[in-house]
Length: 319
Image (cartoon, rainbow, N blue to C red; front, side, top):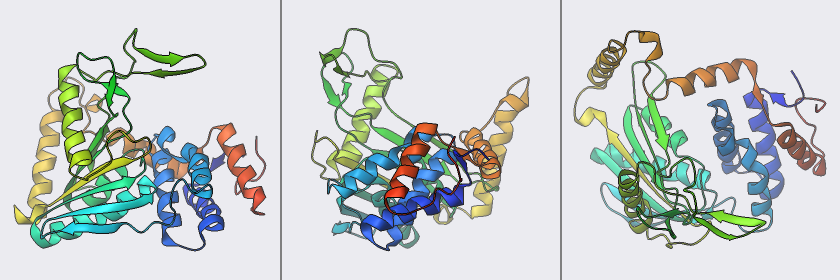
């Protein structure tokens, strides 16, 4: 393999070891490393290993707490609110979804909110974990303001993401995640001056995306008690639903496959029709077999971090 292509397990172990040089031995090292690597596996590198160096330096400089100890603020039979202890969003998200899954097993549904943490990238990793345990899962997250309200020009909402997953009879849950911002900045809405220009984004699909963004702000921002508008302070919300409270898991999975069949039969070329998430699982299988190819600059940066601690780059020579 080229020097910037690595097997996922070796890359995850390397990142975990780097984190241990900062934080000592803690299971949170591998949680954070595996979450980042998983995003590369499914073809979302911008939310994956490319973020490691910034996280590493934020942890080293004390801007992010790792390991963190999220604290329970309030709990009832089906809901909980956590303080994320200024931890990495990925680590905090894992602990919050674990709590939501436990509540769902006990009460049929669990909803957990968490404030005082950082951006987890996406919540896709967490909802697919829950789906693999025969739970329907949703997740919502806020970010620092960067998007205008529909019809507005000043940034008042974050990218405000949402994710959903549901189990199937295969090992590939239905999965989607999305931001509520439009992909391209609206023309004429540039803030600041060169060389640092902050672009005010617009909601996707106009009023529809704006309404979804407000919903996410309420669930993940207000309900978590998150500090509104603070840069780096992210609110999150996780929901898990126990299918067995409504029907046997096998019946649910059968009905999911019926839905898939209806969708596949709706086009002239069934091979071109897919359930949400299928393309991600195809990429995951490909990268598990062929390895993850990092951007050469990212690979060099990670190798240099390892050299500071006497670690050998697991792929050998860099390109």
